[in-house]
Length: 150
Image (tube, rainbow, N blue to C red; front, side, top):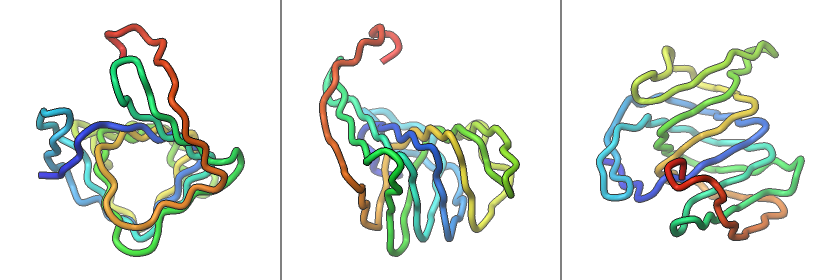
């Protein structure tokens, strides 16, 4: 079972995954509950316009944002990514195909490289590699969403 702990969200204008392998659906412990997630491994990640958010207490979110227009990286070595949902546009030679992958709707193919645009990824864990965020800004915001949507 994957460790996880709490869910966090990554948004980016572009996400590239090199040395990619879709390893299947696994279980992860999130907020004290066992859920099914997608497991990917990768050799490197490039994330343009990274913004990560995670709830730190009811109504409070921690936000980590890269400098606009910059590319954050995760490398080197084996990176394991445990994902609740990957939603965006799969970019194949400039053709953008909308995708929404979850444990109930996993990727149909296992490919060694993938690029996504306008992507939102809900994760439970990222293991391995070193995350470098150019011009990182870290701050706390109040979540104004109704409680049932948090």
